[in-house]
Length: 204
Image (cartoon, rainbow, N blue to C red; front, side, top):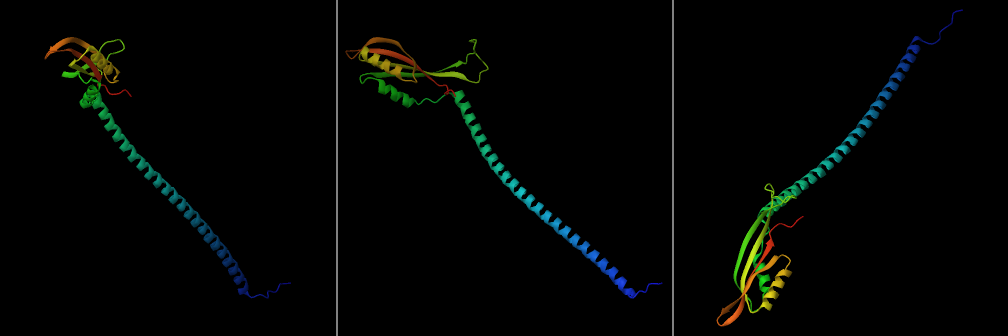
């Protein structure tokens, strides 16, 4: 017995088209969802990359600032090293007025100086074996001072010598000679004193 088909032909075609449209709609939704997800991930990656770039720029600016500070410090170090080399070659400056003020303070009231001479002495630095080091960049420098003067008595001269000995930057204080001298009917003691002063820069 043949089955009777009561549905029209267009109904089957309509159902097929409807299923095809549903499939296309689902596919479109999946594509749109995937595209949205990809765009979201891309935006997040862009924000992360921008944050990393900002952090890198900040670190670069900090490094640039530290580099500039380091260059300033290096320039200052070079200047100090240059000054140290100059001082090492020329020796320390001796304030003559300060030394004269010290001598004047130590001299008794009746004592007077008649002559004052200065001489700079240099010696090569010695090796451990005691030989001179001609290749040494520095030399031992000292200022030799000689005082010629007159004092009323040996007591005043002894006090003056004791005062010179107690001055820290006066070295090797010695009395060269002391003898009587008559002038204008007065007898006094003529003397010559020698001492040294180091011109070497202070050791670090």
